[in-house]
Length: 524
Image 1 (tube, rainbow, N blue to C red):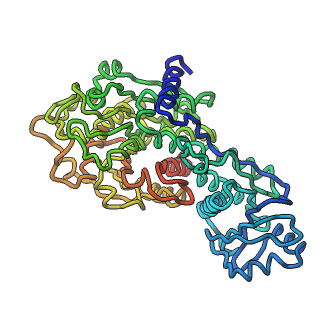
Image 2 (cartoon, rainbow, N blue to C red):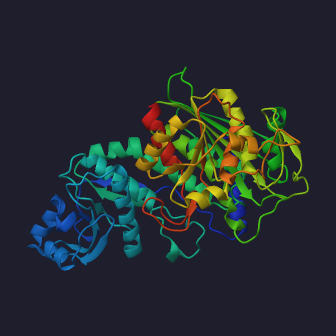
Image 3 (cartoon, rainbow, N blue to C red):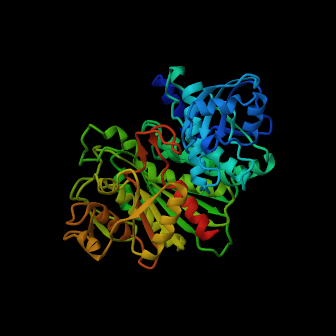
């Protein structure tokens, strides 16, 4: 790590100490696998529909003269997926309590996502009951692909156990688990599959959530760069470049520079190249909106919900998290991640509504609203990525518009593209990964609507649907010949409910699993 990165991290920690907060790390939960069945304490045990037990459950039942089966029947536990029931362990087992976890129909083929949700739900319930999770015995030894199933349950448990509780001073509120353990008869196969395919994705999700959940006094453009530098350190085939404000001016990046000029914390553009494919293979280029805090600038937002504008860099965080996941599992593909980073503040040097800026592409932009800033940083990030790397496909992620979230709620990310043939593969990857997307319209009228009578285009105020107009603006800075997908994740980048695969309320890391799956399906 370079000296300036070390200094930034030191200042971050010092800042936390000065605020009287706990400057602890929130590292990913460690996953352990074992072939040894617990003989004391508590246990999590998988049970199939109608109380059918796997080999380990059968052994407990036999040792207790059928007491386990009787307890399941007496509790009327149907063992539907993502249901649980706590029982007192039967005499003779040596155990105290058993948390029964429903696995559903034994003969039903479940997707990886379904197994992951079972694991996440089970661990969340266990933590709420026991504070620390006991060993989980999925008891799926009689199923095909038992090692892969157990690994996916562990993956779901790892990402479902996520809690951003590092700033709680009351230890009773802490839910973060240092480690989780899972029983498996196929130790080597389970561990290998988890380590090679799933753990890097889990860590990418974890780091993405961490950085998006941090307050804006901790994460700003320079510290965002420093933290991701630290995460990528030591990974193979990784090269990192960072453009500062001087570089931006030299390259004519007036759009991103204009957004950041009102803040004392200068803008940055972080470019991470992962070259795991062949030398002559055009890369996939991912670009993320990275507004580390959005006041709206001179077009200032209302104060009621401004606190959650720390999540306005979720697209950039997910971009870096995706590259981390791909590099961690040594994906055979070339990928470039670009984080367009700025803090949008109403300082004395801030740009004003009515200002005209010139983007790197040479196109001029009239600023109608300084609160439509995300598309401005993307304008330079997208153009830079397009002309520098000549990508096989470009995908951008951005918490761009309230229109997208109002249209699709928290169920789907909004997908826009000029290339409709790309849509089915993204929908398929969304269903498989849990990060689902839905296509919204983008046509010539949306591009025409952002034309301006002072500059080439305007960043706000066109007579067109807001989400589609925002997508058209971003697409203006991508060559029409370049395959391109715009993901507006404003409605799905953070949530206020605990879910099996996303852990505690807050940042969801939407996009990491989607893009990892899409790239795996189409480029590896």
